[in-house]
Image 1 (cartoon, helix red, strand yellow):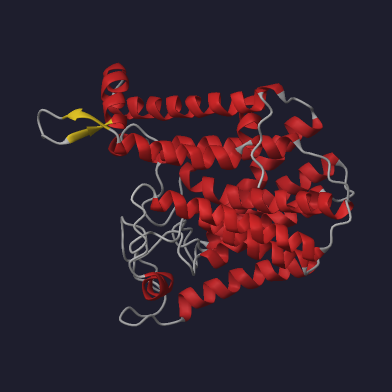
Image 2 (image 1 turned 90 degrees about the vertical axis):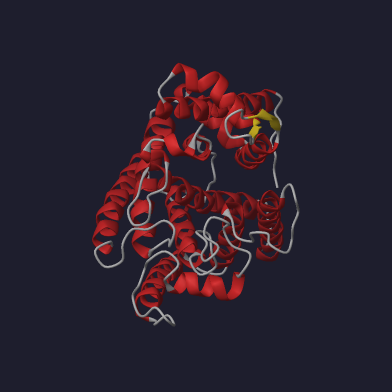
Length: 372
């Protein structure tokens, strides 16, 4: 399999990074557009696309990385060593962001976005390096069936069978049992990146793996685009049908969510692929490509800066008497006066994005690419 670099994959990764920064950094959480917030529970919004897109892209990229390494003569054992190192670094960066700035290990949140990416990358890689694509399909189907069956039919003490309410389901029960005191501070009783719900997230990664297998195959580019689009539409239909039995839910990462979001990822990637790798229209996507070439540093850096902006105090609110964070000061001084609250909040998120785009562009100009 020849692993030629895809312009569309870098741009799709960058598009996802830009989306992540946009939804994670509103000027005011209470004034954000509904599509820039997660669905309250069951259902989905644009925001709920972001994380599964990341894991899908991890799966696609994994196949290209392995193809390049194997073409140079690397053995599976050498690839596994690299995978373990990368997964540990990704997990460690995520844990550092959770620890910063107080480094309170007794109550640190152990799960997180980067932590889940690291785990899914590690386990997905081990599956890929030890199986054929047919076996990977069976792994994917088996994961989805296993998660559906356990969540819907194993009774949870004090709750019952088939309950999927916040904090009242098998995934939450297991998180409380294993991660008590180390979960998301907003809930304390369950975690959207918890242990058990990471199992179906591996399925999302395998969807990307299978797409990578397709892109590395001998089909023509137009055939690849059509196959991706066809499977993408099928994923949207099948995921919706599965939602009748197990609702589409990002926090639980339900089996229907895996299939539905893989469908969207395939639709998006097929469009990027057709426009950029078949028609060769690439200039429009330059900002996304720049983001995509330094995705990890932009992801981690934006999260770190957002935290620092909330930690730095620049005055006292004369009405409440509370300290004013730098982020709040900037929003109130420069964004709130120029638009109604919901649009001012969006403008702040766009400005935050543009700052990091400028940093990424500078790194690209200097040819500084952070590799792990």
